[in-house]
Amino acid sequence: MIVPRAAVLALLGSLWLASGGAGAVEPAECRPVRFADIGWTDITATTSLVTVVLQGLGYKPVTTIASVPIAFTGLKKRSLDVFLGYWNPSMIPIIDPFLKDKSLEVLPTPNLSGAKYTLAVPTFVADAGLKSFADIAHFRAELDGKIYGIEPGNDGNALIQKMIAANQFGLGGFRLVESSEAGMLIEVQRAIDRHKFIVFLGWEPHPMNERFKMTYLSGGDSVFGPNYGGAAVYTAVANGYLERCPNVGTLIRNLKFGLSMESQVMAPILQKREPVASAQEWLRANPAVLSDWLKGVQTFDGKDGVGAVRTYLGIH
Image (cartoon, rainbow, N blue to C red; front, side, top):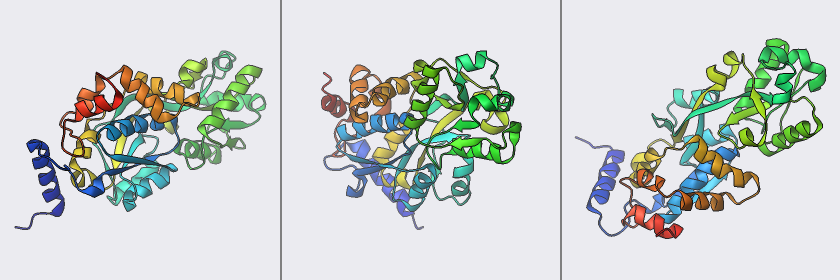
């Protein structure tokens, strides 16, 4: 019987992990761990948390900023290894072709549950009567015919543009304003300061929910999904990566984040704090999470994973 190479690598990796023997637990090519980050602060936060942990384990994580389609293409081509930010269902139209041709893998359980992603307004706008998707067109003049999105190529922008093109909710003739997450938030703050109407892409987890008095619009189930675009966030990886690099694969499978956790890491990043420094600070204050994340995980050279990361963070 011919045993597939991936299965052999997985078995060897498991034997190394079980034995705790000296030397690297994985091939040298596993030491660089290549993440995709699409520029959303929540994904930057989770990627930075895992980056810190991997550094403590002796790995060399690197992050590439890319649009959502390019991130999935990178996994397909194996020029990237891991993407922690597959928002389901909003990204389904983008990832679907990759899933159909089985050119990447998605872990079966989400790394974050309870997220949301849909259009929102400042609460004073909702109080004035703009409470649902069906209300937007009635306030065309006050909104200057604009809906604010984030970076070009983003799935949320695509959903907005599709609504406009189909004249859904009477939005034909509206214009999608694309810029970036930071650019959109600046526009929201400016509108609030001037008490002007604005409709924008909102999501949780994100410190915007604490920073702004904001209201998510109802009635958008057919566009963003039920429960205000209720979402789960999944991890996508290159085909065979979890088997080629089983030690990192165990860590990736173990990862579970929380809404409060992510918002706490994101807040300093939005205030221009370096993301990895924000992640280090959060992990030092919340080291208990390491026990679950690092269950069954060793350092690159085969030593105790939890102990190494705690030492790296200066936790005693």
